[in-house]
Image 1 (cartoon, helix red, strand yellow):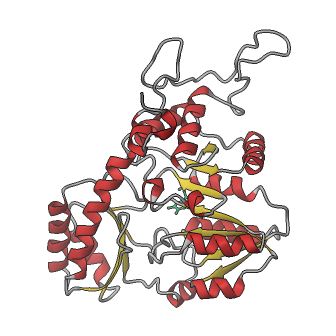
Image 2 (image 1 turned 180 degrees about the horizontal axis):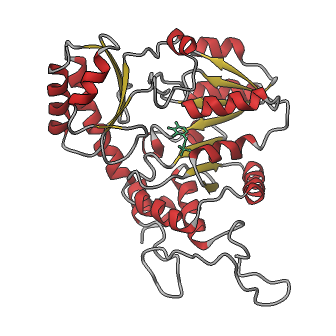
Length: 368
Ligand SMILES: *Cc1c(COP(=O)(O)O)cnc(C)c1O
């Protein structure tokens, strides 16, 4: 008989919640809307008292999230940003952090807000050499995205983590772009993984959610305490939607990656494109048109790709980071590291690759 602990990821995912409800045998996890739970006797609990602390539907999801990232503790939060906030609550006021430069705009805004009110300090690094020069034991934590957003620079988590350990710094990885199907940061030495589950984990553009996973009991207990205290938990219905999305995560991510590889090859060979940024894995691709003036025509000619922010869902999207996801980052700073206003970002969905390529081809042809 196959042992649950040895299951591969597609099996784990498809089986989320099956056998969780012994009383009815429900194969699909029930949505427990009850906010409060009866105590059998004074001093006794079923394991559930009040839904902010623990909820049966959320527990199924949180167990699955932990397993998926090879962690021991998983937390489902109300958004990706609340997942990031939950992690930063671990640190005392006055802490300093070293962060990968090219960053999700919302995280950059949050770090700036924390710095402006005097809570924490943030320093940014560009390359691994830069990281080596800047790392020291005054930093409480290292926060990285890899590949970076939107320029797709890869950060070597193992190398970063090894140096961080030598200096006693915690390593936090935002794994939204690659998902645990492609990259498992805890296996590479990270202490905490964060996701905007709004993106690939949910996968259908119908859910705002976040996830935090760790393999440290000490951190897990602190995170549980903070989440129960700040209350930014994911609601039961949204937990169920995320469970539903997760069941097909591997299928989706594999198809999206295959499509993205074909699209990236097409873009690299197209003379209307100035530069393509694709790390060879995942399904996020950025590219530069020759001039910023071409952006508006190009976007208006696309028929299949939807011009919208966000990423990771079954539908292919095109984003203009300059005015959408990265508007929070001052122009001069953005341009200094290559985020120029002729850059577009694609999130490749599960459609047929021929249709995606044809849409890009016809739009590029009409863009002069
Ligand atoms: C979207 C995103 C976030 C924020 O998540 P929300 O679910 O929108 O709050 C954080 N990090 C990355 C890399 C993202 O793409």
